[in-house]
Amino acid sequence: MNLKAICTTILIVFSITFTNAQSKDILAKSAMLNADEAYAQGKYYDCYTYLISAVKTLGNTNSRIQYLLVKSLMAMGIEMKDDGIWKMAEKELKVFFEVTPENYVPEKYDEMVLAVSKVKKYIKDAEEECLRKIQESSIIIERDATNAEAYFDRVSCEYFLGDYDGVLKDLSKVMELGVIQNYIYETYAFLFVVEEHEVSNKDLQKILYYKLACLFSKIGDQRSANESLTWAFKKGYNDFSQIEINKDFDNIRNSPEFKELINTYKK
View 1 (cartoon, one colour):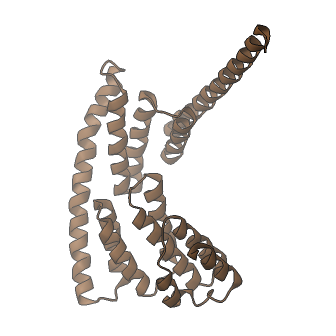
View 2 (cartoon, rainbow, N blue to C red):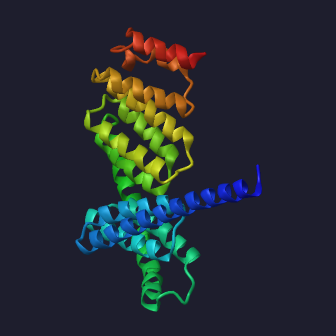
View 3 (tube, rainbow, N blue to C red):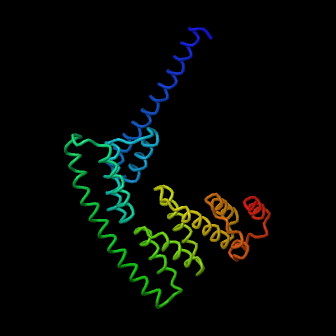
């Protein structure tokens, strides 16, 4: 290859790289503008999703993104009365100070400094409330060990407090009691939070997918049961002896698709 050809190749590669970088910047800026607009309109969840899109597009975050992430999460926490969102706000607040110099826009920096104590107070109050609810639910369970609602109330608080072993234990008990279809959506909600916020507990993920498979089988949704069980296997579930004796799978056990799935992952 002669010098001219080499130079031409370098220019083409540089041009493509520059164009891709430029496209990413435009996409990220668009997401940020949409986030600003959504926040101004009180659409805090939309604001949050636009900001996450900007982070994924850029491959990193910055002070402006983190500032609005914290504000949108705090607003969502108040609006939705969701304690878990405040822990997300605490996490993003830490990132804000990691990426932001003290000479950043003074008003915004000071606002985030004030937010630290607000977020910590809300989380502390929420933790105390969770401990109270767990105690109340435990008393109900002592009186009636078949009260599925009390177990699930305890699960929500255990999750917030980071007691994943408690979550698994109580969620399993709920499933044993013959779960109402609505619990499927609750289980999906746990999975969303676990995976989106990178909770490092693979056992929780695989068990939740396994429980979903059980639930879908019990209501006769074979396709969703097989999909959930596939994900359970991908996350590391391998207790095939349990699957063989679990009556929850009786509705789909003899289907060709179920048999093929078991044979594929049992190898």
